[in-house]
Image (tube, rainbow, N blue to C red; front, side, top):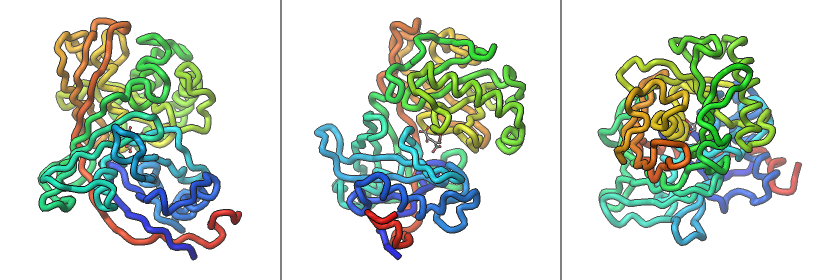
Length: 367
Ligand code: NQM
């Protein structure tokens, strides 16, 4: 067996393996063979690996010191597909990002020299930057604390995340089709990319209600087929090419809020339904809420087109809600609109540090 140093961490509402880039082969084929073996893919139970048999628990972060002046570390996110021998770098992940700051400090890539240490992270998948604020009393990462996020039981130390330049980072433009709404298969959709490509549509326009549990939605083959047909066409319109085998765009079904938030969501990521909502996924939904004319703006009344620069939006999801703070300008029209900054709260927990063992045939150069 080959032993590779790794941490198991919860980042936000996701969980995965965190690696130092220098511990993995740089050759992508060899690296992916190791990650598939480490996670136990392909197998819907991932019984022979560390994966948790769900896309949200089959994730990998690869971290290294950054060569950029504006970043401390580079973070490459990889989605290890549960039931296929496929590792995808086509999306970023803002939840796993929450663990990258603590990991970078634990690895000595960033020194903790104050009660709170800012870690500037270059997100390799999209080229965008995030700054995460890690609690480091006495120069040591603190995981315990009083912050709580929906979708995770209990409390933990806060990790505040600021996104600075995520607009259009995967698709080239914030509203990549050039429109606030498009019509695909007779369904009105809004396509947006504020860090995560997302297609929003009214739940009822594909025969859902917005009251289903994730399991109920996943069992509804008719709804799933309609959504995936729209997704594949939207992918082309969003400059993502053929997305049949990609994990983007995410499909977010919108319905009226139930707990006083801006809008309620059920997000296909893209085949399983998220138990909550992705971090950058919720930034993208919140962005669409504040621009008049989008499908999301229909739920927020006068908030859309509001001239105030600071907006706080609460996006509801199956296990609670996600609050996004945004600094925006020009929200009167698509042409003038921009999001200058988005900020949000996550938590992270180091669950295990050690070595993950993979069979010898996964060694670089061996098939
Ligand atoms: O949108 C799941 C997650 C994510 C992604 C997904 C995420 C994000 O919850 O930034 O966090 O949409 O595949 O980890």
